[in-house]
Length: 216
Ligand SMILES: C[S@@+](CC[C@H](N)C(=O)[O-])C[C@H]1O[C@@H](n2cnc3c(N)ncnc32)[C@H](O)[C@@H]1O
Image (cartoon, rainbow, N blue to C red; front, side, top):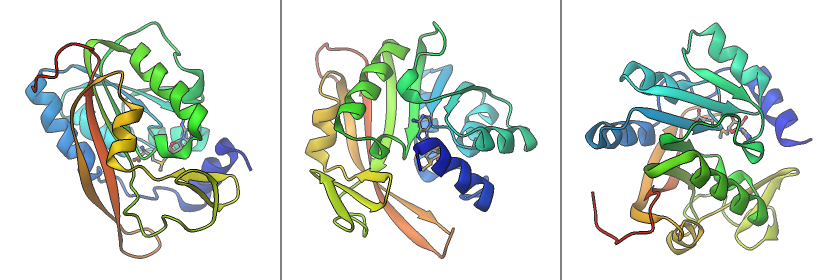
């Protein structure tokens, strides 16, 4: 099963898997984006729009990219008022826009090494100079780390066709070394699908500039 089939099946079978509440990471990013005076947000792997909804309701202009047409249908059925591009983030850009920011939650770890490089290059290409990114991924502190076949370093396939790369802090910083790194850390994300559990996610906030490492 490829990525598109996998996610279409999940959204068909499970609907609004994570409810319409935004994740904690989105709430944190929203406050930072407001402080920075950001207007536009690109959300690669936007799902059915639970985080997009938060950003729209907070006054941002939001564009989503999503591989699952079922997720986009669910967003439309629930009046999530954003423009979606249907396709793979590997095929970005879908427009000639440069965005003030990118918010990407739990998507980058779904790719293997060479594809992650492509995705990150494409992120840079879609950001304005001095644009910001808030990227959240699975960390090596996850309970599932090390389970299933290791197909690349720190990348396990617990379900066939669904690799997960688990990022340490230094690994995440290495991936984004072409950007100015503002901060990184752990965010605990409680979820309730299939029983209450907490994901120990890692985030990195970056700026699209190679200038001096001053903080915002
Ligand atoms: C773990 S879910 C997170 C969804 C969303 N970020 C959220 O928090 O509600 C991963 C999402 O990435 C999407 N996705 C996976 N591979 C993709 C790709 N190559 N291009 C675009 N979207 C993709 C899936 O369909 C799914 O919506």
